[in-house]
Image 1: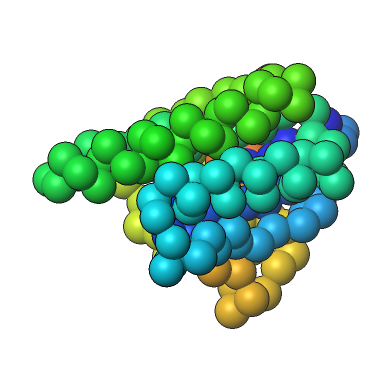
Image 2: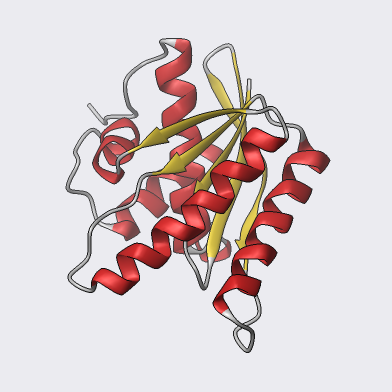
Length: 165
């Protein structure tokens, strides 16, 4: 199973492709989408949409796993994040790829066994599992890889997390 995980944003969208076969994970690709800052918000959304479609076309995931929106104190920020999520979900649906959405807490539970983990802890664990150098994986890309791992766990009935003994 190949899963594209996405950590949505309006300035930076983290993405990560993970293959899971026989309970083993393999990193395929990860990175960030950074829409131009000096354009209208609608143009940023169009860039995110186009970029996600290009990723799907190139790497051909079986599913897309997107982190659900979280509510911030700033309503405008929350609303804009919702817009970014919308164009990401639309890109996947237009390409005929199954979409799953997970709350940040659920992703953290799947990867670390506790929902209150810090971003740095998620980054470290994802890098351990995928044999990546944490210095080379941004927090946004690590969150996206974690979303992909979460979906692989949930959809295949694999172990619930990488909890350490």
